[in-house]
Image 1: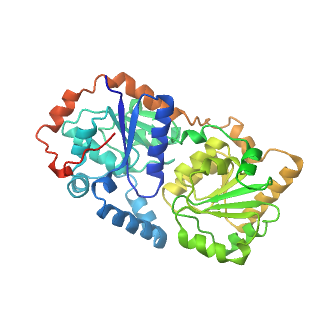
Image 2 (image 1 turned 30 degrees about the horizontal axis):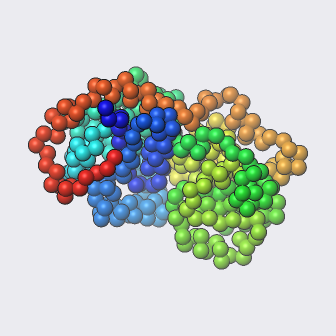
Amino acid sequence: MRKPRVLLLSEGFGTGHTQAAHALAHGIKKVSPHVHSRVIELGKFLNPTVAPLIFSAYRKTLSVQPKLVSLLYRTQYNKSLNGFTKLALHRIFYTQTAQVVSQLKPDAVICTHPFPNAVISRLKRQGLNIPLYTVVTDYDVHGTWINPEVNKYLVSTPQVKALLEIRGVDPSHIQITGIPVHPDFWEAGDKVKLREEMGLQNMPTALLMGGGWGLSFDEDHMKALTSWADRVQLVFCLGSNEKMIAKMKEMPCFQHPNIRILGYTREVSKLMDVSDVLITKPGGMTCTEALAKGLPMLFIPPIAGQEEENCEYFVQAGYGQVIHSADVITNRFRQLVEQASTQTESPLNVAHHSGNHSVYDPKCCAQAVHDLLFPTTAEVTTTSLERFTAGITATSLSGTRIPF
């Protein structure tokens, strides 16, 4: 008897969607070691030449014209993808998705981005008999996530569940699981030991992150940050923003033994463990990882859209505050220094553990998939897949065998 298979589909618009898919795959492996998981960025996999160009254009638009992206988000907020758009996505970008499903024969498909979610929904309307689970990767839900073929929505908060219900989703098709994070974030590490291991000073530490595309600050914020370098250790994690990394390393204000400048790293979990505060854009994944670690946050003013909704949730819940001015940084760093001298817990950490808000369990999403998968696995037969894929040739995949 073959082991159960879960296919996780994402897209490369930003880094959070695919990061969530990989996190969930690792979480499923931890909860259910006998389950095989495969993560695919569907557009990039099927169109390796065209997709990177589209993602690059999106990234450039987001950097140069964020207000345009925000406007598009807001004007389409309550609208699902229309039939024409879904057809265009399928014909132009995802024509081979059926072959991928046919080869891999998953027992369930999990989507962490609206586009593959819409494509699998379309295939289900055509006869594909496989459970579709959709992980909403923010603390808000755009209309493009909504498809009646979704068997279960896995969402971050009761507020997101309520938004789905308002849009007509049956409450029985929604489960509050929190956003999945990698098992590395399920437990906190030893702060002092890890600081020594990573060559950092045992002193108040601020971690500054901007997601996979890097971090941007204005000049006043940079001055406020670096003016504290004698008393607060600064660790900049700038992702793939190579230009900013090179620029910062050349600037005199960053030439300090208590300032560390990093690019892409796989040690974000440890960096959060050694830190006392996180300064970041309010992306859903990064904020959830910090939430799992109990790490207080300061937010760069968000772009209108999902970042704004993420920010509102975490601020209202008492997990962070927005950097409206450089004074916010100054006041927070002053608190860190004072707390280090008196060994008191930060107010934000107290709020995190106070129980005033729903407690986030980082294992919950992986466990939910386990519980959903096994009652339905026996019902998803190879026969149903064979019926769906009858007449589909493998020539469009050039004879390529896709390993699970």
